[in-house]
Length: 84
Image 1 (spheres, rainbow, N blue to C red):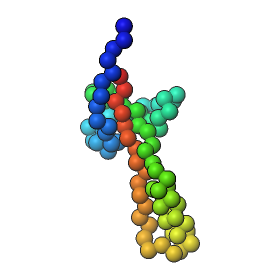
Image 2: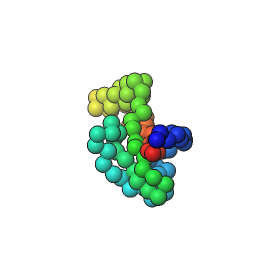
Image 3: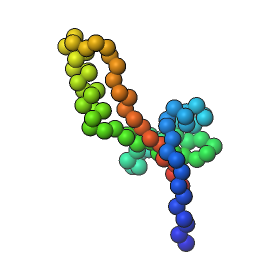
């Protein structure tokens, strides 16, 4: 018997951790890691872009060479998706 696949909004790691989710291994799921809580298990994936990667790389190189105004870089985005 095939069941209907549901849909839900993706969540951020910060929100899930604040709600009490705990990290679980994600080996074999192509995810970076998983989070388990009362609401279920979420698999968390990198959602980075080439533009963000380039901006981070340029800033890191500028910091290392002493040419950076500051050390601020874009965060590496992660999205977490509920498993069923």
